[in-house]
Image 1 (cartoon, one colour):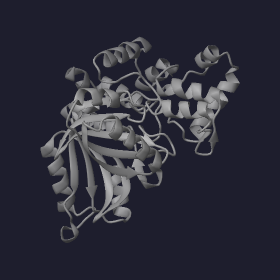
Image 2: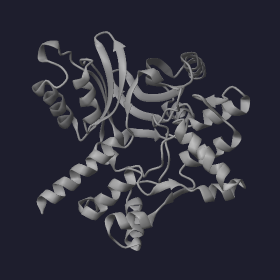
Image 3: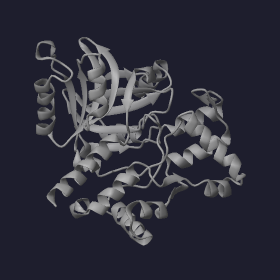
Length: 347
């Protein structure tokens, strides 16, 4: 499998696929499936993109979790200046960043690293270069470390069920300033689940100056070996719909872990679940809700349903306004670029 990632053509193809080049929503297929005029379907898709309900489709680099098996969620104290902004936007390990205020901390970042040594070296380098904080102003980060091998659930499309149910009940009529209708929701569901996504092999073949059949075979191999997964669209904040809050929770589940875990896996409010080892807490839950009140009601339901099982929950609330940067494919693209540069340097 690693041989596939030492092939320059494969890496260049991955760079295009993971950037969404030559990948689009198949308007004709949706038009036929929903028995709607092509122009009608195309207009709905344009509105979903225009109002930033979803991003354009791409191939997710699922190999990222194996290349960077250490997931770090870190509360940090950084300067709020242009240097910090530039650093966060350009660092190849930072997946997302949030404006955040808790005690001395003012920033929360989500990072991917090769291992603990790489993460600690990364932290040391920040201080040595004084890119975003000077030694005298430094405050040790409050970091949570997770293994991507212990991810129990990763389903960015899960919150769609909340939107769909809210639309049917009449409690969710729009996302942001975009009015929803049944056709828009059906298209949204298809895009989020990777249905009716088209890959333009001819475009990719021309871009890489190879035969179209070569592109088809290589994509099939890369998918079969788990390097990439089926192309799909995601929410701009990946696991969080627009206008929804993101809540990070540490759960201490003391009894009937398998039963509680199964319930959480099936919960549409939870797109991400990780088995953890953080002090007293043994599960990390990322959930999404319209309001804090909705989340508190949901949490109370869990406490009542599993009152003999859950001993503690610790929450961190991140509103849409707190989002500084989430770039779903930036870390993947930087990884691929680095591999190409290393390979070219060997020649």
